Length: 202
Image 1 (cartoon, helix red, strand yellow):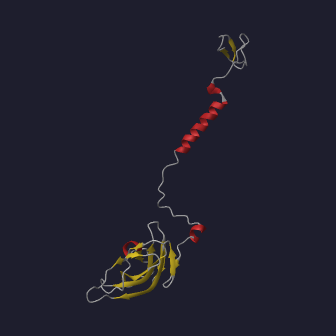
Image 2 (image 1 turned 180 degrees about the horizontal axis):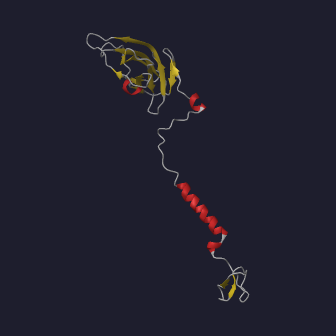
Image 3 (image 1 turned 60 degrees about the vertical axis):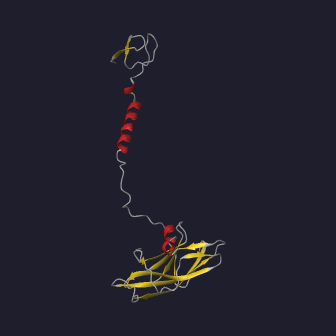
C-alpha cells in the first residue's frame, strides 16, 4: 500500500505515488531533492570541484624545451673568414685573424693571448651610419662566454666612428682570450633589433 501524504494545494490526504490530487486536481510533484536531475547535478558539481583542485601551479622553467623541426632549420648560419655578409645597412668582411703575446708595454694575463680580428664594414645605406666596436662587436667561445675587448697600441686601425653612404671602414678588433680557447666566433650586431652575423674564427 502506498504511503499517504498531504496534497500541497488543498491538504487532502493522497497516495504518495498518485500523479494528481483526486479532490483538487493539483499535480503531485516530488521534492526537488528526490528527483534524478538534482543528484546528477550534485555529482557534476562535486567532480568539477575535485578536478579544479588538481590544477596546481608548476615550475616550467626547468622543463626541457621542445625543439621542432622548424626550429632546427632556423638555426643561425655561421660564416667563415673572408666571407662578405650583407646585413641591414652594412656589409661586413672578416679579413684575417691573428694572435700575439703582446708587446713590451701591454701583455695579456698568463695563459692568455691577444686575438686580432681584422674586419671591413661597408655602409650600404643612403645615410651616414655609426659603427661602435663596443656595441656591435663581440667574440665568444664555444660556451657563449664573451671575451674582454683590449686596447693595444699596435692595432692597425679601429672599428669606431661614422661611415658615409657607400664608404668603408677597416680596422682591428682586439680581445684577450685563453690560449686553449676553442670554438671562438665573432658576433656582429647591426642594430638593437637582434640582427646578427656570426663568423667562425678558430
